[in-house]
Length: 544
Image 1: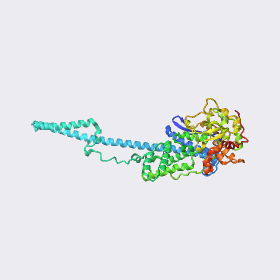
Image 2: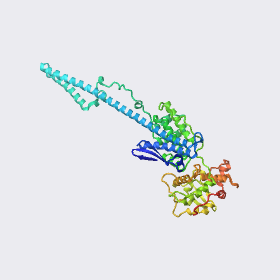
Image 3: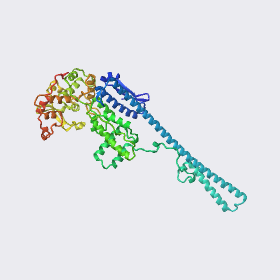
Image 4: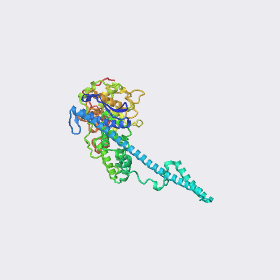
């Protein structure tokens, strides 16, 4: 994503293969014109969000704001707009840096000027003291010559006064001009009575609290908001700080609010449910690679509403001047639509050779077929252990259950279930993946240090389906939609309750009987349900 060329960082983004004819490029290179890595990361994050939105628009060739078709020229204009906005960001950053330099120079010159005034006061005072000492010595010499000081007492008194003044001067010169900063060290007539008459720069005298400090001030003072609302506001602020740092309130402008909006639009929807300790760039990249659903317009609107309410309080307290979080529009329609596979698309998938070199054709086929003949989620499939394949009432099943030692659990409470293994999978040889000494059924997959098991497979599946020309609306998760759709369109006597239990959905019927007795569905009924899944064009390659 970031490339250091010479002394400046550049943003680098590979254009998906299917979109390259539209842009005439294989990758985007945009100069960030900064050698500061932290600044470059923030700019790259914003550019990643904008180019992701551009790719989504290119795949549908539809303007998301006006919901109307666009042309290739319109698409290129959108790309040029991204370049223009980045140049404006760079110009604003450079202008702010220049203004900050002026402030620093002004502050330094003010300090030097004050030091000069203090030094002048010191010199004036010490010059007067030297003059008084000189006059005392001259008077003493004249009195001694004219005989006015014949008695020793008068001579001793005059000599003592001269020595006292001499000692004062010695101490004054030993400590230097710093004496002028000590109260009373310089006579009142020589002390600084006022600051220079130059007009101070506003930013040099005004101190803006940082966002987290302002948050605590506002939340402690607001007794009307509930604890839950305060907690959600703190979570939104923590997300902003993770992305942009704990900025002073006055530095958070509409431009930064827009970049935060772009970032939220690119984060996966699952991020809102996490502890938010993951790397934001990695999460944005994961959402793009996996083609994951992103945060909804409603979630983004909630984040902005919390920040807008916070800023209204800060404005009333004169901590902020204006509210950059108000008057933003959000698309509240559902994003990332998913649909079921068509027979033609399944035929294309079946007939296309797997292109990944790190995951075998057999593992690709096995994981794909399990999804197609069970509707299981990718995470559920990739976390299957050998011990999770057992017979229940004489029927071979996948046991989907929590594994706390691996910090993995089904997505919902209903996700813990038994899924009968389809006869087509048994005939194909899915059980041959079980290997002695291995923990997982698909042992070839690597368990990453961070992120869910199966991340690498999901990324490669997404690249593969794009390479062979499948549309963006089709993803690995579409197998789940496909099983659900085909079961609900079959002509048999399958019950809706059985389908929900097979897929790990909450019961679609909310009657007392549905909620209380869902766990009582027999494995034979679930086996009858899964066996109803049929594919005329998904033929099984590389039988094990």
